[in-house]
Length: 277
Image 1 (cartoon, rainbow, N blue to C red):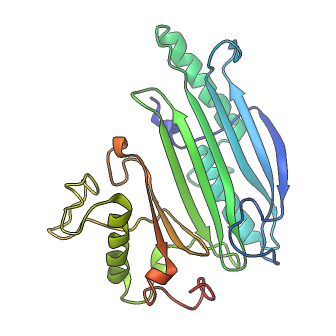
Image 2: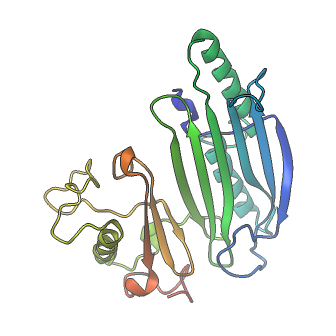
Image 3: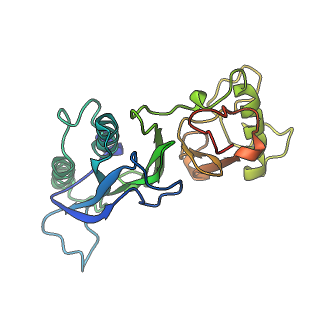
């Protein structure tokens, strides 16, 4: 498996799938001057000389929002760069990385080279990656990446990534910016209790013994921690742990919902979450 493609994307044909005024699965708020406008693009490429009617084919598919305006240049640029990074693994700017189309071609070329060198291998590779704007309002904008892939090896992968941004300037929102001073420990204790409820682990049983946070050096305390892979919703904070983040692949992903009414007093009432607590 080529690790280059663990974060990747897309192909030859690039066409608009739909237009959005900020309501692509929007879960928060109405349109305003900060509402991001976008066109949903789709790209697809597959290996040559492969008939999908007869067999599975190695392929790569992307669906993503192309930002076309918000009235805020910094926000437009920040969102576009985050989307590009998720699609192609570009570390710096879109100008220095491959386009989705070029990346898709490189992916197919690498597969075809691998197939010619190892003709007995019948495994087909695929990547399906979708980026969506799931929240688009005056307080925050949230991007979500959903991906499933198989790149050789024992099994494929399914992952979900989230990133939240402040509309006024495009600054990415990190968890500690939402937490009231001195309240992170309290928040994590409440969240751990909710985590135990979600996973069916009783108080008193070690999370490590249950298979979670098994790689953490806890120094004798609880290994539990909240991830920066989270989404802000109207109801609370949604934390998403992908396979291998806190547990073996066989245990899958873990979704932890932390309702605002369960963590009252631990989050800042002013600023990003104003009017939601």
